[in-house]
Image (cartoon, rainbow, N blue to C red; front, top):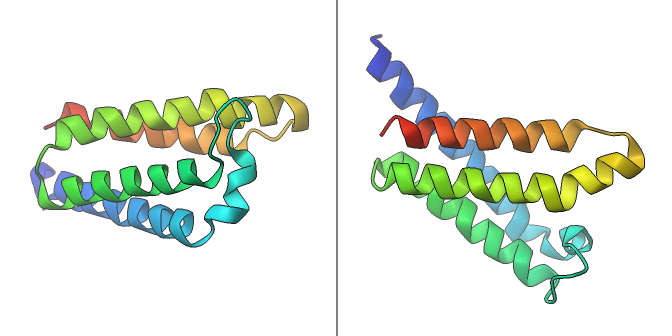
Length: 116
């Protein structure tokens, strides 16, 4: 496989993971609603909005259309999650797992976006 084929396979695998995340957000929205910052009204609606964003980015990556826009917006969304949801939780609990996961996912999103 050449580098372009490896990049394509990686982009699609990443997109498939995003689709799984989107599915979990759609099916477990009420359970995830408690993570929505209290300064945002609407609770579960934000979980559904993030599910739609995840799914749209995944589709963009799979069909290789608007990849730059999707990658940059997705990366920004994940950084917002880190700053507003996961970092405050990590400060209180000492658990950095979600901070690291979403920071890595943001970096991957920005990387994919930068390569299109």
